[in-house]
Amino acid sequence: QVQLVESGGGLVQAGGSLRLSCIASGRTISGSTMGWFRQPPGKEREFVAAITSSGHGQLYEDSVKGRFTIARDDAKNAVYLQMNNLKVDDTAVYYCNANPRGKVAGGSWGQGTQVTVSS
Image 1 (cartoon, rainbow, N blue to C red):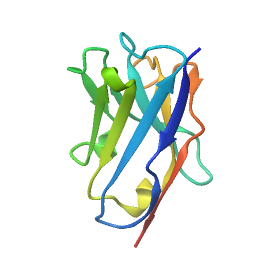
Image 2: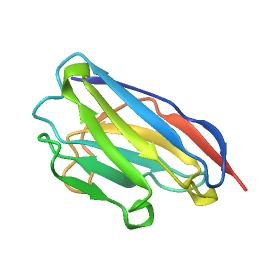
Image 3: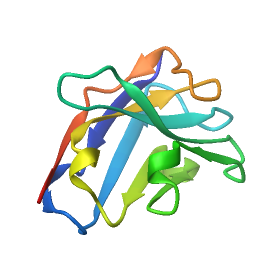
Image 4: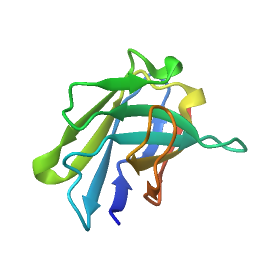
């Protein structure tokens, strides 16, 4: 079972940027699709982005397309989420996830990192 640790969250004004990191341990992420999900206050956890094992395939939730970019560095066993032009509606706890299938989460989660966007 892979262990995932997210970091990089914080408080940012609308229009700002943050870069989230997810470091995996326990086994390599090489060969695995990796994803990011988020849980806004009072809402269900939702899909944000995913990246295939090759890194060439990416999938995004419609509201983040053109603003968020998912990337991976298998040498560092890491996945990243660059978030630009942040909006108040992006406020959520962001979670790294291993082996999602499309927009459906896989079995391994990190503890999450809080992103708060102020107006």
